[in-house]
Image (cartoon, rainbow, N blue to C red; front, top):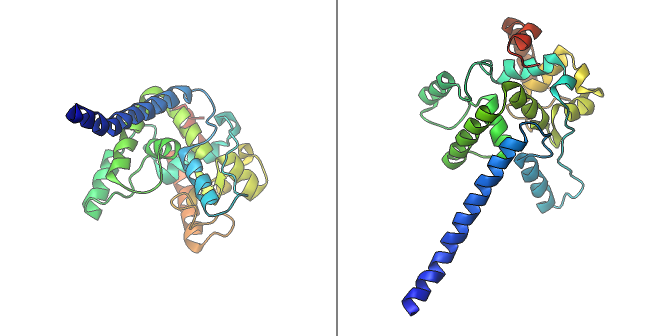
Length: 240
């Protein structure tokens, strides 16, 4: 009887772990299905930022975004993030294999760069910040999920609504109002390129105090937007 009881006690943590994993997987699947058409109320990164603020005693911090559909986001803004972050976005199935191979060859297998907009959306929405093989593996699975269920337009819409443009500034509508005092639907190409220019690290690079690097990146993004074909690129791929 003692031996049997011991096995039962030891088995409880494993059982609870299995249940937790199943629950988490269920929540992710439900999120992928529901957010294919419902507005996203918050992301995992927003939750992480909020909890971090509370733990440091900052109870005035509120992590949120103001959801807007793609029809209320200017075409230059949609184009700018693709020009800056993922120019093959309309063509790939969630992963830019050539970019991944290039990064691995250059950095000796380090987990940096080469993330598509689909991968960034999956990470921002469902996972946590930081770099680890566990997180990258989960990110890959979630990326396949959203690429399977969502349209490219939907992925771009969700990305633009949850991405962080500055400390506590989430989503393109909030960023547009915060930095330019106008709705996202009225962002110009120059303003859109400036917002996209800080995306590699919005805590280091500032929209309202752009460094020389950010300004150079802004101009590079504007050139890339033009080379992609401008708004006709979005229309061709049904992204706006």
